[in-house]
Structures are given as structure tokens and as C-alpha cells.
Image (tube, rainbow, N blue to C red; front, side, top):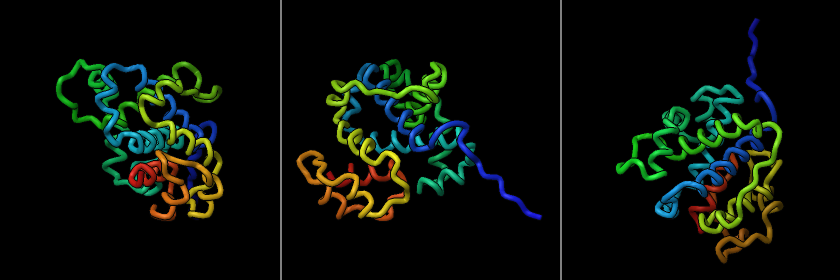
Length: 201
């Protein structure tokens, strides 16, 4: 007789936990030196994606293959994120390394954020806030508004479901309705949604 083992998160909702890691990652970035050098990189969707990988690997005990299928990424990308040397990434962001390390940068940042939340006991209990002045510097305030509005939304999500949550939102002078017309559906995860929006603004 066959049986199925279903991996469940050790505590809380996967989307909520990934959101916490994402927010804490932004807080960490805001406090690190030389951030301004990286602000034009398309790191934001990668950071959201990395937050999901770290949570799915460590909290839901998913395999790299399962994570890849769930997020619509390659198994190698999932592995690179989960195995990134976070200390090496931290040294790079703080300006201690001249050359960009081979590590997955967003993966290292997400791992630092996850570890910090776990060590401080904030992962299961507390809300994670973002400093608004740092958000403005990072030019990511739109992403936070999007994440806040889609909280609790079931994924994959179609255009109508996203429009219902996001209608009226203006991102960099463009109506969200216009942006949603151009993205690919169904949207599998919040990370993919951020990536799609970033591509069209």
C-alpha cells in the first residue's frame, strides 16, 4: 500500500514566512555599506525568490526539485540560493571583497535574514517592519505595497484575482491595470509577480 508524505511548514504560513524573510532582507540591505552601488540591479525579484527558496527548504523541508517546480525556477538556481555562503556575501556587500563572489547574492542575503530572524526569535512571533526612509533609497516601496495587498491571496493567481487586490495602485506613474495586462498568467508565486511587474515598469 502506497503512502504520501506531505511536507508541512514547522510553523506558520509559507507566504507569510517568506514575506518576513524578504522584509528582513531589505532591512539588512539598508544597514549595509555601499548599497547604493547595487540599487540599479534587478535584485528585488531575486530577493523575493530567494526568500521563498530558503523558507521552503528550511521550514517546509522541500527538495530542490520540489522547490524548482513550485517556483518555476531551475533546480540549479534553487540549489545555488540555498547553498550560498552568506558570510561571503555579507563581506562583499560591506565592501571587504573587491571581486563579486561566485555565491548567489540574493540567496546569501535571504539566508542572513532568515538566520537573524530565527536567532532573535522573531520568525514565528513578531511582525517585521521596514524602515521607510530606506525603502525610498532602495526604490522598492512599490513592492512592499504589492506584497501587503496580496497577503493571503491563493497562488497560482489569474489576472482577475490580482486586479481585485491591486486595482488603483500606481507604480512609477503607471496604473497597475496597465501593467497586469502585460504579464504572463497564471502567476505562480508572489516572487514571480514582483518579477513580472519589475519587467514592465
